[in-house]
Amino acid sequence: MADNRIPWDQYFMTQAALLSLRSTCERLSVGAILVRDKRIIAGGYNGAVSGDVHCIDEGCYLVDGHCVRTIHAEMNAVLQCAKFGSVTDNSEIYVTDFPCLQCTKMLLQSGVKKIHYLRNYHNDDYAISLLERNHVSFEQVKVDKNYIEEIVLNKIFSE
Image (cartoon, rainbow, N blue to C red; front, side, top):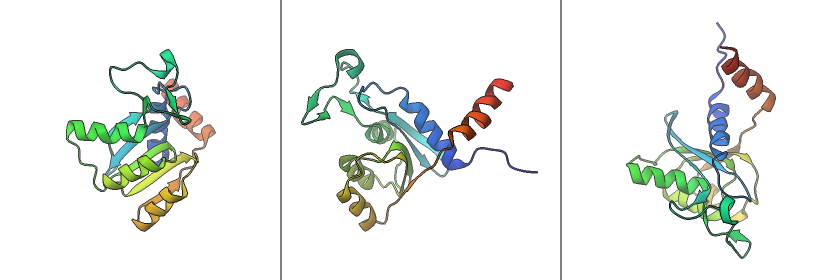
């Protein structure tokens, strides 16, 4: 009997992409899922600090070309683990865009051992060298939109 289930990498990346739809930043919608032992331990998307106004309501607050109002998706996922007491050591992250330098450093410090990303986004050379020196692997996940649509959406709506 063939296993028709969605592969793990596609499953988790689809979850990250779905979570990115909650983003409140107008510049880029990013989603991230932290996974340990094939289980989702946290998720995050880029948006304002709880209680602050959102970029979608008042625009981005830009300083040197960066929105400083927004907390990145990766950081929100790690902070969710801190808030609720989930261990991040030896976890993996699925993120829709390659992490920025600051998020890369934060992921290294939190014990993430592998980064899966969907899109390249201003990949920082220093971030890549840090990952390599710390033996943290990173790989781009290819998600076939037709496969997702055919397998996932058609299955959901045919039942």
